[in-house]
Image 1 (spheres, one colour):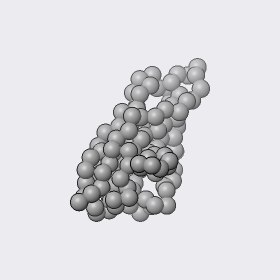
Image 2 (cartoon, rainbow, N blue to C red):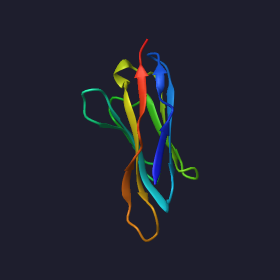
Image 3 (cartoon, rainbow, N blue to C red):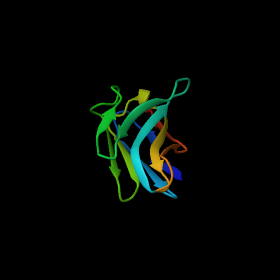
Image 4 (cartoon, rainbow, N blue to C red):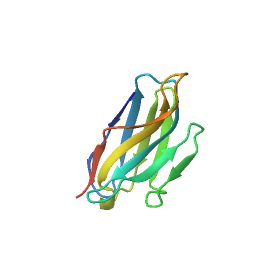
Length: 120
């Protein structure tokens, strides 16, 4: 199982950016998927998470600015970010609870991270 994140880059304050993360490999089912971020010198923190039923939760710092969504058929989760601030600068990691086969238990997987830099 692999999680491939993409979409990071340099964006000006106030601008938008969309991250994508696709799961591939042996996948029987995917439960929750989410995005975390880690800024320099700080601990990794939850940004947003979405359940297999579509319920979402967000960090207070991004509520109203970020939207998480998923395409179940494509095994992909998205993070639409708007009104970006310099303090959103971080490496963003996707995360998913994946059950690889009908005979296995669900495990937690991490993507490789994609850098988002918000600067003028």
